[in-house]
Image 1 (cartoon, rainbow, N blue to C red):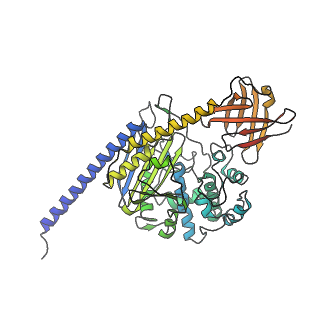
Image 2 (cartoon, helix red, strand yellow):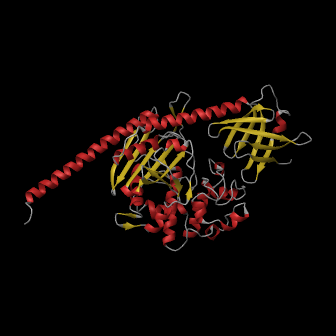
Image 3 (cartoon, one colour):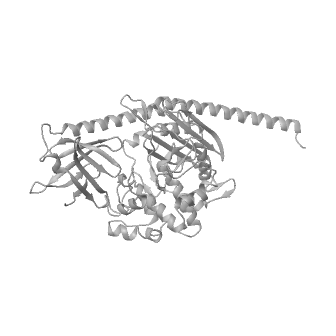
Length: 499
């Protein structure tokens, strides 16, 4: 017998009503969680996207684009993706792997002939996979790219002149410029600039209409970055880290709406609306563990529900309450972003905010996972604020200890003009020191600041973007200044140029 059509239709209507009611309840709960997080962390604004079962379950903006102004964050407000750019690069490389144009274990120089590392073994054997999972042995050296006065190609060349800080393939060391090199390798292999490839093969099919690849390519309203001032209140930074040229490691920007397609694409293993853009086999490679990431204090305290962390290729892989989680964070001056995937539950989150180095994005992501997956609740805001405050106190103690070792009532060995000159390093390039009316002035890359006397022949640079950096000058037997060491930049030694 056929069921009564009237009862069948009534059941369908009631079922749809229950789904709508559940959806409405979930939306209210998410709204409340976002508002609570913004208040707890004093974040001016955020945009949040939730994707589940291949549909957008939540997409909202909250708060302000800039403190003191009236423009509110919307789902279309642009934020820098920072290091979350890396996943887009690895997905693009997976497409080339599908086409047989590369293999993950190809030598880097097969695709970028100019690439070099200073260590002979690493230089001879380095592969695309080594760059993708941060195991070359090269340390962080972020001044190769951060507000640099040279193009990405030059940053990659300079990286090849730096000594490795650890042996090749021995440990995980996050290194942005290696991803810059991968972008150049993609360009060589695809026969077009990597950002043009990305725009055509990913941005277009995924419906990422306002996403861009440099600060010269904005297509919509954007948020203003903020930092906490001395009163622990957010102040507008008013400038994005400039990327006049695309950098595959960091330079992408997007809105929460743009990222909905990206999350759906990842959760459906390379498909969107039945269109396969990349094979599941090669996309899966990007979030397959490649290198163990040390899960030590204090990070361990921030992630009490996580016990193992690995890096894949452009993604961090960890478990959260027994579930596999694929995620990545990004931070640039004034902003933070967190992308989170739970493949087994077909759930994805994007949290974009306009406060520097806040952990709000992570706390809110965990809160939403607990809410949406009906897991045991924890007050993640309170938990992480407590742990962050511990870290700040520890950092303040270390800084106090450094200043406690300062020798007062000392003076430089020479008069200030004797320290002036041009100083050079094979990778970091040229630093110029001038004796001016305001004192010794350092000019390096795009940065400029006064060197305050600290003690003896050590000077302190206080800079809004670089923080506090100590520079120590060395004299030869004749009493002439011959070199300058950037104590807080991996001990990089700039040698004075003659003449």
